Image 1 (cartoon, helix red, strand yellow):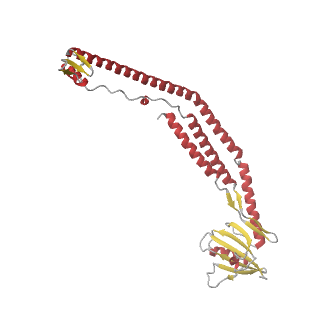
Image 2: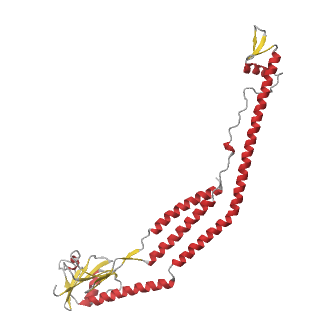
Length: 341
């Protein structure tokens, strides 16, 4: 296998890998979940899924790399092949030499004379008192052996001619194979700079395409600032609505109303506001945090640990604190129930 054949095979493998890589890149999930805020008199705002720019940039980079790999593989497959070259192995096998007699084929040699007589069935006919070979008769043994020897010389000459023709065919095929290989080498040397230039242009094009769609540092800073503002606005709205300050380490903040399915969060009260978030603080630290804001309060259920569920009556509102875990991170639900409920 010549190097160009290996290059072509490698090109097909790169193309296959690049296509699979492209499918993976195009199917990358760039959606992220967002929190929602309940606005009294209006309903929940936000929530659902949105496209994340960071994930979109990653997917774009994967697409660029996959496209580059596919392009390089295609170029290697196109320019790495070679044409069919005739091989000397396509020539028929050599004509085997006559191995029935070994030694000098001379009429003076008795072994040779005996071999001729046995090969051609030379016999003496007692009726005609002549030597017979097939349908031909000879008066003397010497004349018969001379005729048979002449036949062997003709056969040897024909075999030599066939061998010469075969050698000539082999030489012609080898010469055509050599000329074909030289022509391919010359064509490859001529096309190689173009291939490298095309590959370089493809890389430059893909890099440029990436820069066109890639997020600049200014755009990233603006996006992050916008996300931080949204989070700040969400926290401010929730704190104003519930009259409490949300812990600084809170994440996944949501403000909603309970319904029939979620009423268990707020002791089976439907249609009440509740604030949900995750915290790395322990359950007792979270309880103490809200005790400082809402007052001492008391446990919701006497049968449960004091740091598990808690309740307050504060400014004509009833608050219940529910924590569905005892070890961080803890999911915290703070319910706010009107006095009429």
